[in-house]
Image (tube, rainbow, N blue to C red; front, side, top):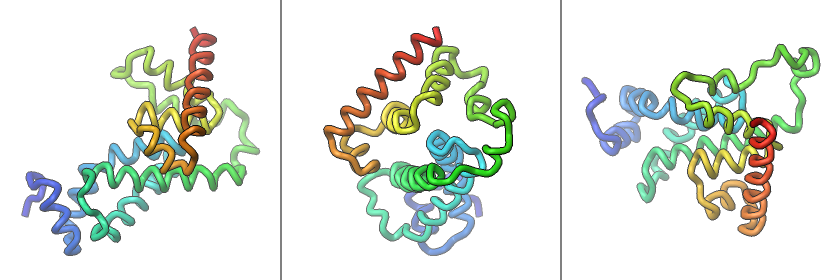
Length: 184
């Protein structure tokens, strides 16, 4: 039975009944975007992969709580972002042993992931500069500019006030402009 041509609503009904083929089809449709979302926040390929898989498990377990007020992709992305932010906060508490032992030039960076022939030079430069910003600035700009979250959604996701959100975005943009000016 091929599930590739079915719409997402009918696949979700099958997923809710425990159909593993339907779950695999949903996973295949959304895994790339969800991985990229996690990667932009945690900046580690293995961690992003783990977060993405945990998010799918959570989504399939809590599928009955999906009300359909937003698209399934938006609902799933919210799970991925919440798990990514949670992992990012935890990782800031601990310094991995590898980071203390390896010289800086041996560390892998997300810059390699962003460098593709399809990405315009200026977009690559902006993403590179965003990576050099303070983590809170980089995080809020990624959620706002790349993921498309508005101020209200950012306040909810990051658990900050509206005024704090506006100030943080303003300072992050100012810091990004300064980085871009220095890079040019």
